[in-house]
Amino acid sequence: MNATATTALAFDYGERRIGVAVGQTITRTASPLATLPAKDGQPAWPAVQKLLDEWRPDCLVVGMPTTADGAPHALAEPIARFARRLGGRYKLPVYFVDERLSSHAAHEDARDSRHGIDAHAAALILETWLTGHTARHLEPT
Image 1: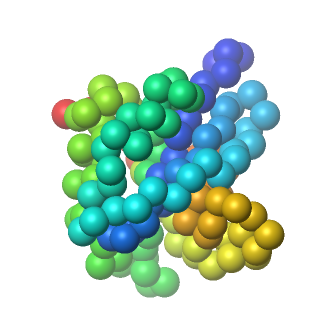
Image 2: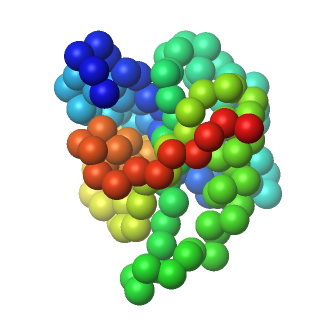
């Protein structure tokens, strides 16, 4: 990452709700934006488009949970499919970040917030990526 700001949108995937947060690399901070309803893991794509139009991110970050022993999570394949769709639709690089325990930590942050737990979890996922912890790049398809 260079001295110019890189803006990123992060997603905390769920089959019924998808949290979204925005952040940038200069301050390495993230803010919860919204919790989008999802049906069988599919968000309302026009709502995602609206957020991308508003924030014009340079990249996208998706939380990828693992189990306590490091094994793939039951949602790993649906999350990977969602990330591929994001990259394909919006022609932006997509990064994965280990989001293990982000939802638990988000409960505390979300208590007095209008954004909900999922958006706060997305902000924690994005802050992890912004501080340079392990992120895997997914080439857009």
